[in-house]
Amino acid sequence: MTQIEQSIVQKTGIDGGKMSVTVKNLSYVYMKGTAFEKKALDDVSLNIETGEFVGIIGHTGSGKSTLVQHFNGLLKPTAGSVFINGEELKGNRAKELKRKVGIVFQYPEHQLFEETVYKDIAFGLVKRGESKDVIDEKVKKTAKALGLSEELLEKSPFELSGGQKRRAAMAGILVLQPEILVLDEPAAGLDPKGRDEIFGLISGLHKNLKMTVVLVSHSMEDIAKYVDSVIVMNRGRIEMSGPTRSIFSKTDRLEEMGLAVPQITYLLKRLKERIPDINDSIISVSEARKELEKYLRKADG
Amino acid sequence: MFRDITLGQYYPGNSPMHRADPRVKIILTFILMTTIMIAKSYTAFLMIAGLILATVIFCRIPFGYTVKGLKPIMPVVVFAALVNIFTTEGTLLYKFRFIHITYEGLDTAAKMSLRIVTLIAGTSIMLLTTTPLSLTDGIERLLYPLSRIGLPVHEFAMMMNIALRFIPTLLEETDKVMKAQTSRGVDFETGGIIERGKSFIPVLVPLFVSALRRADELAVAMEARCYRGGKGRTRMRQLKLSKADLQITFFLAAFEFVLLYVQYFKMPV
Image (cartoon, rainbow over all chains, first blue to last red; front, top):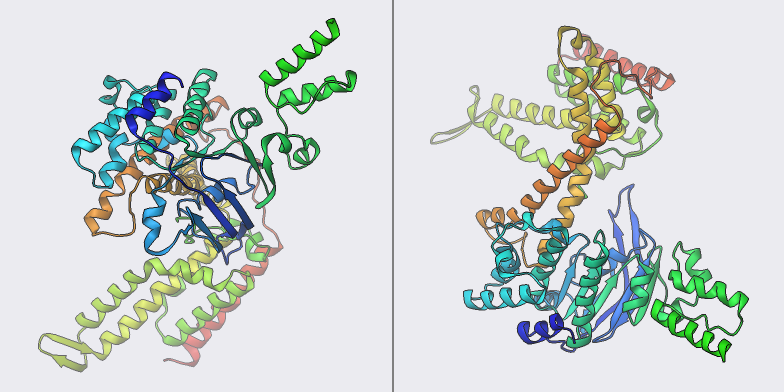
C-alpha cells in the first residue's frame, strides 16, 4: 500500500461492500420517434461482480457512455432492466441504489462551480443533508487522500492546475463514498505524471478497498495495465467479454472494430515471427521485459 | 433531457421546400405572415391552416414534430385569448358581477389564437426545412443593401450564425453538466420554484465558464484563418435560384390568388 492509498483507507472509511451491477436485455434509443432516432444500445446483458475491476472498450459511438449512464439511473432503459446489488434500479428504492454508484464523467473538472474547492467537494454531502461536522471531516480526509493540501481547499477551483482540478472534481464524487466507481476516460488530457497519479489512486481504491471499478477508456495500454476483465462494445452491442489477456489475444477481431491491442503486444507478435519460442500473449511492458530477459538468458546459456 | 427541443430545428428531407433558395423561402414566409396578419374571416384561417398542413405533409415532416414545436407558445395563446374575451366591449352574452363576456370578445379571441398559432406554424415550416447556415446566408444576402448605409450586415449575420451553431453544443453541454450534478445529488425535478431555480446554479456556472472558453478559442481560430470581417470576403456557396424556387413561389402565388378571390369577391363571411 502506498501512503496515499493507506490514508484513503484510514481516513475516508470508504469500504468496498458487497455489490454488483447486473444488466438484463438493456436497449436504449435516443430521440425515439424522430428522424434522428438512433439505437444506442441493443439488447445488452452483463454482470459485474463485487470487487471486480472491469474495463469497457469500444469505438467512439459504440454505446459505452450510454451504457454506464444506466448504472445510476441517469438514463432510463427503453427496454430491459438494471440491477444494483441484486435490486432493480426503479421505484422507491432507486434513490437509495443510485447513491451506491459514483460516476466520474470525462473531463470532470468542467463541472466545478463553487467559490472554493472545499465547497465544491462538500456539495454532494450538503445536498444529502449531512451535518456540518461530518461534512468537514469527510471533505478534509478525501482531499488529503487525493493529495489536495489544506490551503488549496480555500482557493477558487478555477485557479488550480489541470491535474489538481481533475483531482478536486474526483474528490467531489469520492467524498460520497460510492461502492461502485465508474470512470469515463479519467486520464484524458493529463500529462504522464498526472495520468500515473490518477491511475495509482484508482487501482489503490480497487485493491485496498475492494471497490468495484468500471473503467471506460480508449487507451488499450491503460486497460491492459489495470483491469481484470474487459467488455468490448461495438455498435450498441457487447461484441465480446472476458479476462483481459484473452480479449487482447483476438487482435484481428479487435482491429475489425477499429480497436487495437497494446503496442507491446504488437511488438511481441512481430518478434515471434522471427523467434518462434517467444510467448506472445503479453499485454504489458513489464511482462514483456520478463519474457525477453528469460529468452536472452536462454540464448546466452 | 434537452435534446428534444424542436422549435426552429432543421429536419432533414429532400422536398422542393428543402431544396429551395433560403432567400425565396424567407420572402415567401414574410408574404404568408402578412396574409395571416390581415386575414379577417374564418374561411381565410381555414384555408391558411389547410395550406400549412398541406406543406407539412408535402415536406414529409412528421406531424407530431410540428405540433411539439407549438407547445411552448401555448401559454401566450391562452393569455391573449383570455385578455380578449374579458376586455372587448359589444353585444353581451353572459354577465356575472364584473365579468362580462361579449360576442365580439369571443370572436376576437378565437381569431387572435388562430393568428398566433398559424403564424408560428407557418414560420416553423421555414425553420424546419432550412439549415441554420443557409438561413443566415439568406438573411445576409437579403439585408445586404443596408450595408450601403453603414449597417454591419455581415457581422450581424456572422453573429447569428455563430449563435445558431452553438445552440446544439450548449444543449449538449447543459445535458452533460446536469447529468454530472445529478450524480452528485442535485434534483432538478422536484421542489418549489426557488428550490429549482437554485439547483440550476451548479449548471449555469460551469456552462458560462465553458461558453467563455469556447468563445475565446473560436476567436483565436478565426483570426488564425485570417478572418477580418465582411470586407472583400467571397463566398464558397453561391446562392442560385432553381426549379424548386419556381415551384414553391408558384404554389404560394396560386394560394394567395384563390384566397383573395374567396375573401373579397365571393364569400364575405
